[in-house]
Length: 263
Image (cartoon, rainbow, N blue to C red; front, side, top):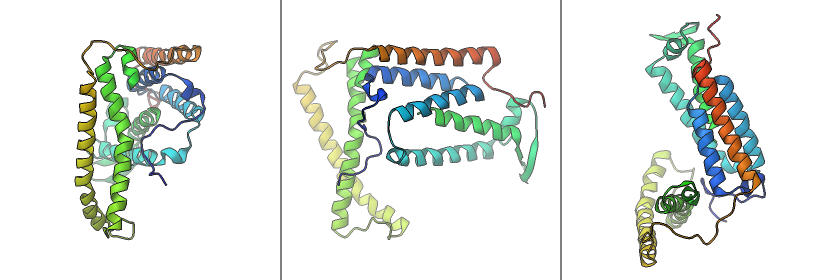
């Protein structure tokens, strides 16, 4: 059975998959900028709803991205923990009020303002759900480099899985029955073959591109380039609209929605 990959293209017959790569990249950038420039809870909730709809339209199952979801949740929890440990009064400073829910220890009071601030931080994480780089004006050399890098991730994962199975066949225990630190130590034996395999593949690709004169001319033609359809223009227009709404709300009411202002 093929190894399960963390980051890979999942082919589906969906509205999202029928869009061009340029459209998806452009919408992703517009959507990301719209979420980055604001901490307004209502705007973030609206963007989160859009991301949920987009995920459902893509017909990707939750179990297929479960690892990345768990990883993101762990990172989010650690991020909120360190925000609270380093500055437990950041929410109070931002919103200008202080409502203590309970005292924890030393200088750490759990305030409604701090919880609300960390809620907005969490929303920003949940909201943000390349050959196409050349289509938006980026040099094809840069676009090709990004495309190769992204396509190389599943190859590394497959190599890691193959080397891991080979090492286990030689008696190197990497299963859950082994202690954590023993598994961590045994995993080091996979790194050297993985690095050598990766370097060999990089050298092969570099030689092949050089022999074909890659990068000689300022522009190049493409074997296959999908033309824009009505859906592509509609999606990009929708992304621009989301960015304009986020900017407008931020300019008129500020970056932060303050529910404590009347308290």
